[in-house]
Structures are given as C-alpha cells and as structure tokens.
Amino acid sequence: MKMWKKLLKDRIAVLCLTVIAVVVLAGCFAPYLAPNDPNEMNAVLKYAGPSAQFPLGNDYLGRCILSRLIYGIRPSVLLVMLAMAVTIGVGTAVGLVAGYFKGKVDEILMRLCDVMLSFPSEVMILAFVGIFGIGLRNILLAIVLLRWPWYARVFRTAVMKYTDKNYIQFAKATGCGTPHILFQHVLPSVLPEVSVIASSSLCSLILSISGFSFLGLGVQAPTAEWGMMLNEAKESMLIHPEQMLAPGLAIVLVCVAFAFLGDSLRDAMDVKHVQHPSKQKRFAKKREKGMAA
Image (tube, rainbow, N blue to C red; front, side, top):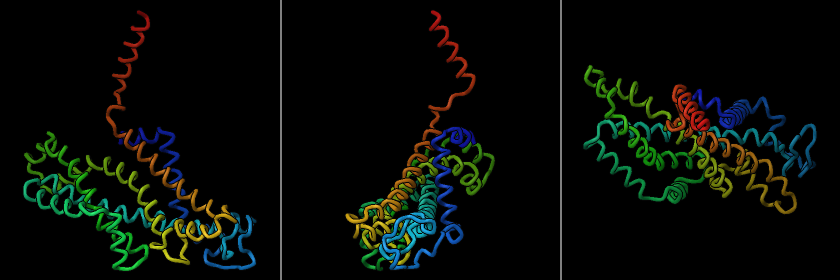
C-alpha cells in the first residue's frame, strides 16, 4: 500500500498510468469511439488530408486512419497485455513452487527452464510461426510457451528471499497450510517485483508484436494493427511520409509510458528511497546543526 501511495505522488507515474488507461479504454470501446468503419475503402479519398469526418486523413485505400488507429489498440496493446499476463502467471506459479519447495522439485523445474532458455526466443518464435503458420494468435502462443521460463527463474529467486523470513517460519510453526502460506504471505511479497517486471516487459513485447506484423508475420490485412499500418505505409513513405506518423507515434507513446511506469514502480519499491518521517526529521536537524557550526 505504501508503494502505491508513493507511486501516486510521482507525476511521471500518474501521467503514464493516465496514458495507459486512456489507451486501454479506447481499445475496449473502439466501436463507440471510432468515427468511421476501419475497413471501409473509398478510392476517391486516397491519401486525403485531415478533415472533419477523417481527423487524421485517409490511407492508400481511402480508409480512415484514426479509426484504424483506435481499432489497432486491440491487437497491439490489449492482446499483448493478455499474453503477458498469461506468461507471467505461468512463470509466477512455477517460480513459487520451485522457490518454496526447493529440493528435487526445484531441480526438475529449473532444469526444464534451462533447456527452454538454451534456445533464442526470437528464433524459436520464427520457427513456431514457420511450422504452424503466420498470424497473431500463433505468435502470442509462441511467446507464452517460450518466455515463461525466464520469468519463472526470476520469480524463483525472489521467492527464495522470503521463504526464510521470520513471519514465514512463524506461519509454518502455527500450522498454516502450504496454500495459505504461498497465497497469503509469499505471493503478496513478490507481487511488487512482478508488477515492475511486467510493466517493463510489456514495452519490449509491444515492439516485438509490431515488428512481426511489420514483417508480415503477425496480423494480416485488412485487420487494423499498428505494425501492419506501418507496413502498409512504407510503400508510400517517400511520397506520403505522414502516413507513418500516426501508428509510429502511437507505438512510441505506449512503449514510453510502460517503460517510465516500470522505472517509477522500481523506485517506489526501493527501500533506499523510502525513509520514515522521524528519520527525515533527524537528518534535517543534523543538517541544520552542521550548517550552524
């Protein structure tokens, strides 16, 4: 709770949370916010400039860029957040079990993670797509299957820091069951670190998904997606460079918001930056005495 209070006092964190909330809400209510049908084509409006009906203009097929930008939030951000939640959920579960029970359970799970981490994730994603076909669903599935071991190792290390704490030993001594200890004591202690890693990792995952779509391996036309919009705009990049502006800025804005939010979360949970009010008063008095001397 103290961490979130400190986070809300950080202007950058509040701004990032606001940007992310607005983007997520816009994606959820895209049918109500989009001014036009994102797939409606009009050859007369090819590369048309901004107007009252089309605030960001039209693309090479006469489609509304703003509507496609709003609908593109769903595959570019919402589905990526869902995939990240599943990935971190699996990694957290495995890390909890391995870090708490240790012994043979830990050895088996970590050796499995080592085997999966021995393969480069990007190469394996390309191989997975090559075998099962292109599309956003296959890419997200590959990401979930291939990236959870890294999070499992990170969370295992975090869990092992708390398993020997006094309050955990006291809970064991009083007869609390393993599920109670894991979900009532260990997991709440690890959640701040989970939130930091999740917010930081979302930035790279959004870039990866947009990159795969830009290469033609992710979302396929006519579905609106930011990376796909960049792919379509690159054909006329020299003649109409403004076509790449909207999706490019959207990707940058969301990634920067998640990146700065991760930094703010890390600072908020860093005990070195948190001082008790009484300590702050003592430090202030010592500083005043030193200046007076």
